[in-house]
Image 1 (cartoon, rainbow, N blue to C red):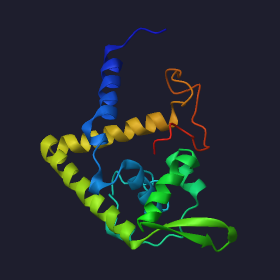
Image 2 (image 1 turned 120 degrees about the vertical axis):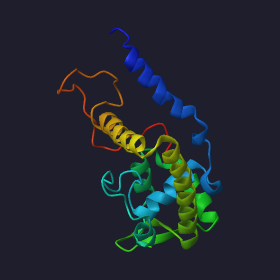
Image 3 (image 1 turned 90 degrees about the vertical axis):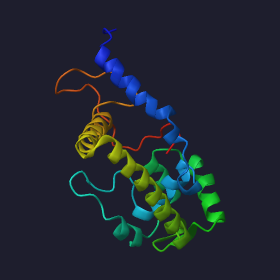
Length: 194
């Protein structure tokens, strides 16, 4: 076992705080995290955090909100969110019961069903986005613009590090440019939390 680096330990504990923070329990527009993530995937046809490289050019939310997508299969939603399909199925069923999503037949495969977002679902995403942006606007006021931009850049580097250099099955990598483990391109069936 290697020695404990106090800087690495401080960084670890700082990141761990986000898992227990009150912001994780917040329900934007009264919706839980899983519901928002499924609706966002359906809205964008992709994972909402990976739809584009927006570090230099933030996305135009309104144009994304109004784009039409053919919908996604349940297996595609679970792959995008890196969870098992049985985790997503009850979320989709609940959203469907409320009229926020609907099931349609896949025109290319009559045995397959696609899930699409409805106008009511789009309204939920719009309201949740506005609520989140109000919170992050306050964060920018709190930190200041320079620190906010620096934080965004650092968080992007953290994401890239964990997504490309750290294997989910191992927490050890070689120092330097070479890594002993690389992320598998297959979707992870993770902890069932989208």
